[in-house]
Figure 1 (spheres, helix red, strand yellow):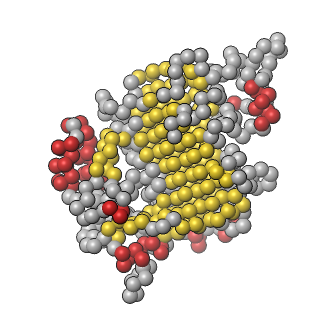
Figure 2: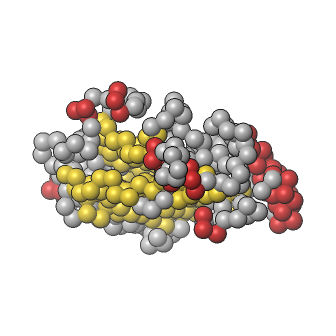
Figure 3: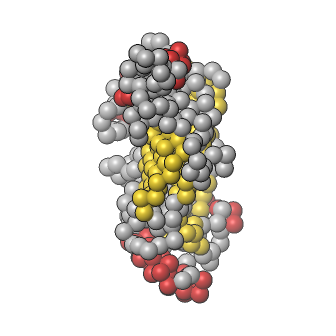
Length: 399
């Protein structure tokens, strides 16, 4: 759909402020549109292609205690050196009873059937057959698999601490309209860090595809970085102030007494030091407007900060701290119309106010984001429709 047609539709359906934002977004999308990966810009019979989910790591050992214990795992990243971009959805489920990891991939592209399938009359392999899993232990930027140390291959034998799950394109430059969704299943008992990152697939202006993030059962610390997609994050119901602290020490902190025998729960003198308290941050990079919902249990010492940091104010993207009711359990603070904080279940005067498990959720923008229909419903005249993004919410029991 030509940008001019989209703008006409937007003018009919959106208020002026939203229309202006959509116009800027459409222009930005067009700048990274057809032709960026070396083609002529004429996609001909090209259309959205979405493969089936494929198992790429099947119940590989994932140590959560003892030697080789996993302390950090990273899933997804932005493009680096013309490669390694998933540009898609990331799903993480803490639902495995055994200490194993499972990874699935679902490849997508905007291309013709011939090129995507890569199996017709000597056609080249196409995008589908050139995209694969990249999973290595590294503290630097990723390199091609043949440049990586074979001992750092996370899929060989047992998963390793510090491994990353990325997407690799075995060609000169990854096409701007391609990528893969990632779905990872982890042990319920994992308490190490989780880092997630994704970006949007906006290289095709007729089929924009924001990268969404879904996490369920998260019981530890970490960070989620995204662009203009939607994040739905459900923390586990038995979340602890210090997820990596020994359970016996957590109990000792909860029942800690001072020298006078008075309640001093979570005093700095208790066995779980403050530097291992849990921290989670879910946010969109500037200037992107993301919808973010985080579902937390409200029965632990929890400090929440939520905001919309768009520089364009006033706007309708007011954050919601729904489970902070202003009673003895939680004291909400309105920093501004676009920023709220709340401290749940402050344990005792011996505890450091503002500490506990810390959660930050923020959107860096507010405005319309173009979202396409499902691939099977797409037609050449399909119009990507705008959704309002930039809304941040923290709640209990809403996901």
